Structures are given as C-alpha cells and as structure tokens.
Length: 203
Image (cartoon, rainbow, N blue to C red; front, side):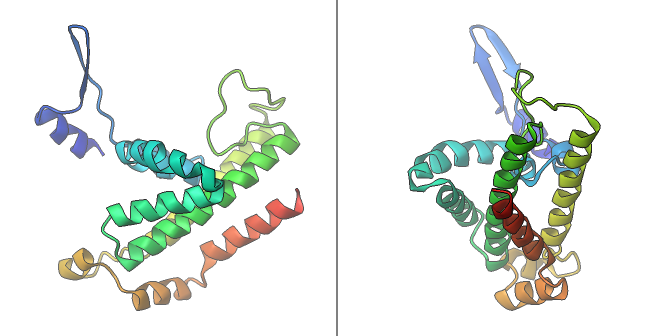
C-alpha cells in the first residue's frame, strides 16, 4: 500500500487540486483495517481503495437492480476478470462474495435485533442503536474480527510462498485449489454456511 502510494506520488499522480491549493492525498490501502479487521467487508474495501471505489460505483451500484446478492456476485466476478482470471483467484474472490454477503446480512440482522453497533461497517456517531460501546458490543465485534482473520488465513493458504515464480504468475490450477482447501476441510466455507443458517434461524 505505502510503496504504491510513494511511487504514484513520485510519478506526479495522486493529488487533488482545489483553487490554487494542491493536496497530496492519495490513499491506496488501509493496512490496519486489513491486518486487524472489524469485518471481511472492511478487508475487501480497505485492500485496494481505488479499485474498491471503482467497482462500487460502476459495477455494484449498476447491478443492484438484479438484487443485492446478485450485485455482489457480479462485482466479485468483475474483480476476478480485472485480476487476470486465474482459477485460484476467481475461487478466492467468489468465496469472498459469499463470505462478505453472509457476514453483512447476519450482522445487519443482529444489529436490528440487539439494537447494537455490530454492523460490518462502523456506525456513524449519530446512529439510532441503543447499545454502542458496551462490553457485549465490543465482545461481539471482536468475535467477528477474529472470524475475519480466520477467513483471511484460510483464503490466504492458497498463495504458496514456496512455489516458483512461473507457477505463481500463471496461477494455480483447479486441482491445487481443491486439494488445498480439502486439506483444511473447507473450514471457512462451512463456517460461512453455518452463519447463513444462523441468519435464517434468527429471522
């Protein structure tokens, strides 16, 4: 994140101009939101801010007429194409589509039922929830944060640091992806499915 910001700034990009005042304000990522996330939604929106902004404005919002879940799938499919459409990247991004959607709807429902600030994104200061900073709210947000770290570790397991550069550039095949996740018992996918079942039960 910081390296790309530095190189873009050195190249003369990454500024906004208001009247005669230049503001060097390019932000590519928010590393702390990725390493210590509140949610997987926060991870995917903080990973690459310009890409996230573009996908949100030009893909997601235009696809919303298909329904929220369909719009999420279309957005992640577009992201997979823009990333070079290798199987393992597509598998990670489409898994992220399911994970972020289920997390979003579950936390939205819990926030409504508990009237608590437990949404995927931080509530604005003037939100209408009765419980904002209590111990229960903090614990629930920490649990969801730990779950996000678990999902990140699981999805990141596909990116093997021991493989040669050629294999890494070409992307890992379907057999490698399925084998790797099978070794982990498809844990993240099952947890996401469990969260979806819980979401349906508390509806």
